Figure 1 (cartoon, rainbow, N blue to C red):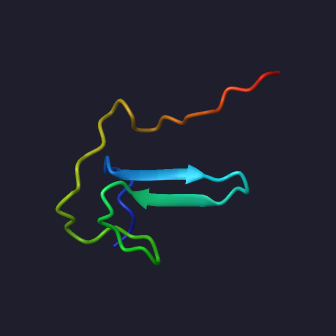
Figure 2: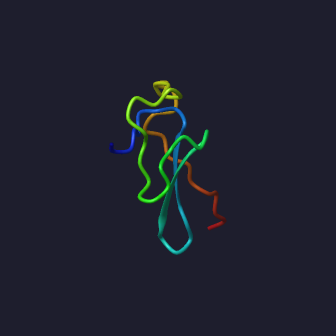
Figure 3: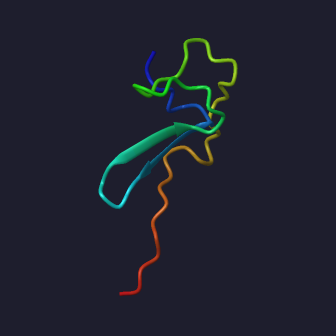
Length: 61
């Protein structure tokens, strides 16, 4: 099964080297390759308030 990006437990980060790191906050995923289990018991729909937001570090210009 593919990654359920619409799950509230899905998290992705980009490292300083540009590598994208995906993880499941409750560790219910298959690790290599990263994938969500079919019919995951921990699936919860992501709320509209955090869907699509990106966090940026503040920089001194």
